[in-house]
Length: 178
Image (tube, rainbow, N blue to C red; front, side, top):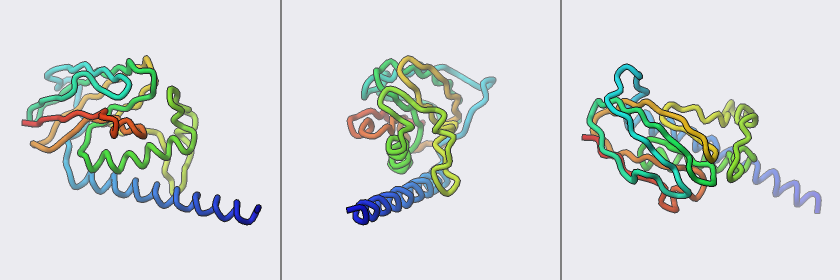
């Protein structure tokens, strides 16, 4: 019995490590292949858009921006669960969802709470769960944050919550870049 349990545990651990590496590599490849823009400068902001995150939907549900426009997103989590606002392509979101699943599996993301101290831990291969990318914020209920973003050329972009199950439940919106 101990031997079987040890084998199953080792197999799951190996699968987790491999899937985490794959998700990280895939995410980086998509970021390089699909220019989505870059962090913006506060002095170049042309407008501010308030984003409200509720339990499995955003307000507004879609956005329209101009090529080269710098936007300040003021993001508030008005839901009862942890939510993410992440700018990217559908492919980038798919890769990031595997990383977010790791956060749940490691006890970092706990429904309505984040264990921020665990976000600094090395999860293997130098990968942490800091969640400090400039195109994304992860917020507990009631928290607020902002992203200043300059959009690149026209692209098929989305904003999404990649907390496991949220994207699939419809917590995503299109960003039209013109």
